[in-house]
Length: 121
Image (cartoon, rainbow, N blue to C red; front, side):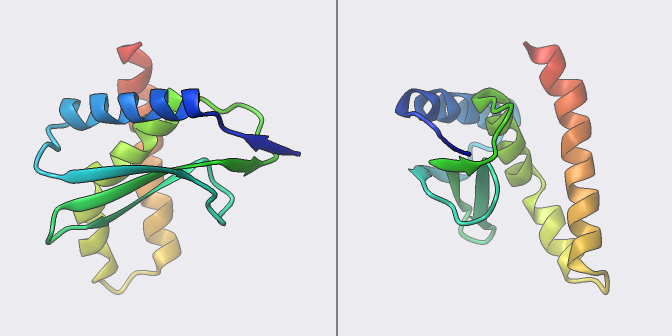
């Protein structure tokens, strides 16, 4: 089953992203938002260029098999990726596999979701 995210959810997603960007002090970043189909099986994604301090955060228009989509929690997750992007880049320069880095990276984000996000409601 394909779930289509709405423009209303996108507006909520952007608003929440901006809230967390301000909360984490990531104001030196130029962030643009997109609401488009992403080929990966994900709710959203974040890409960045550390040197230029520019980032793109996209909300997926179509999510396959989605059950519990929360635009606010998804926004929190993507901004946490931006928060940790420099660490991610440094880790990728080491002799560790990308999958190990991704696992550790998302473990920290899930902890932040469970601690910081849940208490911020």
